[in-house]
Length: 245
Image 1 (cartoon, rainbow, N blue to C red):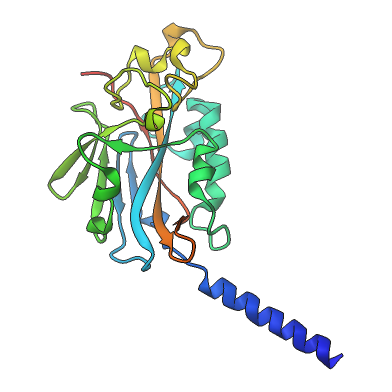
Image 2: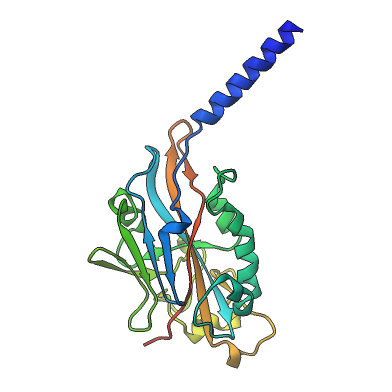
């Protein structure tokens, strides 16, 4: 009996050590994000993270809609596009979770059709490195210019993913702008607009709006395996894409 007890205590000790030693990376708390109407969000990045931290990543997905929503809150997701509500319901339990940690967010988000946000003329991994700790990221989707991310006085134009060459988005400039080439059903497929979700049962004449849901995660390196580790996600906002101006 004593032998089995000692074995059990040893197993519990080793298990607890494994949990303590597993690398952990801090998320951006959801409370650090302020959302405005359907076109603006401010993300305050905490001023420190774990030693394994390397950068932040933003995942996005675009949803076609026939409905204009002035303020994109949870109650409006189904009205915008049922797929948006479905995705949000799956992602929501991970936000600010203390138990659903160490999930591979690359597989998780890309498995739901989300893609990595990019920047025009800049590497987003470099921009969202330790340089942004303690700063605000301001995402601006107002109709006065192409959607941007602003850090201090630096303004970066947002562009869509091409899956590292796996698909060829239309329009070819890849801007987050509401155009016919973006929402046309014939272009929503795995080889063209693979980052867009259609809305079934509506005519092309009703495809007047598009919205982009964006989530931010912290990324780090597991120094034992040299693989990426991820924080839990936070919702930046669901932005209405402005019309081409």
